[in-house]
Length: 330
Image 1 (cartoon, helix red, strand yellow):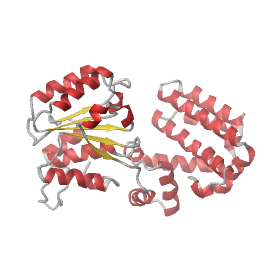
Image 2 (cartoon, rainbow, N blue to C red; image 1 turned 120 degrees about the horizontal axis):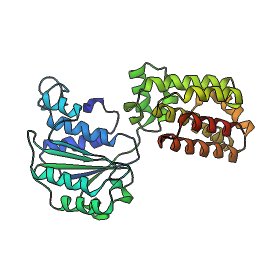
Image 3 (cartoon, helix red, strand yellow; image 1 turned 60 degrees about the vertical axis):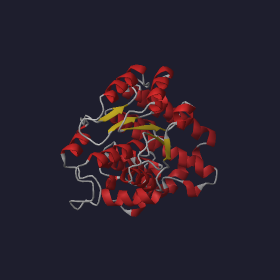
Image 4 (cartoon, rainbow, N blue to C red; image 1 turned 90 degrees about the vertical axis):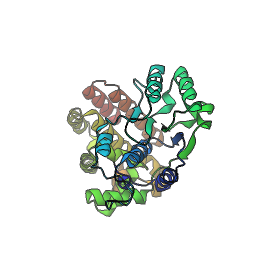
């Protein structure tokens, strides 16, 4: 991905580019902030910018990466020899993964100006792996840049945090996301604002999914809310059979959208009408709100959270969804 394709985070990107252009890149950075707001995306786009053969401002690309030179294509394909990415396996980063990184760093760079290493979800380092990484940060290899990415900085060893230059990432502004939704998907302003509120400052949900399907899915769910089928057992079971055939990620997104209906209903009961996500169907949300107490609404949201976790853990999708829909009707 090119830097120009990233929505928001302009200050952080500018700081990294200025450090590179002035030959002041630190050996280690810590990108921290809420989950799924684009930290890893910025790290990869910056590495592509550094590796690009045409990123000096020539060829009319104003300093951004070109996306078509050999290094750019290798970054995009995930096979650049000087680009290392470590992600948790089964929710942990083991010491063997850090030791393998250390061995690769010893060989130095192959064809780029730097060797880049991105460690995603750094908070999932096991204790022994964290200690091994600390040694790497204390004795950095030459021409190496390590970027640690985390949404839970408080779970990292203070000694690791202290050896990195920290960059905080914040959720994107609704206005930035709304504008990009209108540009990319030709949405109307009202619908774009609703989808923007649903994303809650995270454009990564668009980058890592077929978001056009999610837009269409919300339209279908809104239609069913208007028909009150979410409060009709037969209709819900029928809909659950449709959902159970969805892929896992789309099913999780479906449940997330349904949660926003109940979340908004609870917000209405507390008088926070201005904080609604689904502002285009306020009357229908009020209908849900009038039939349930605030405690009942939060209980249903909790049920949906549990079902989402079950789906992600590969529990039978059809049984999970039918269970959720029955619970929502009781």
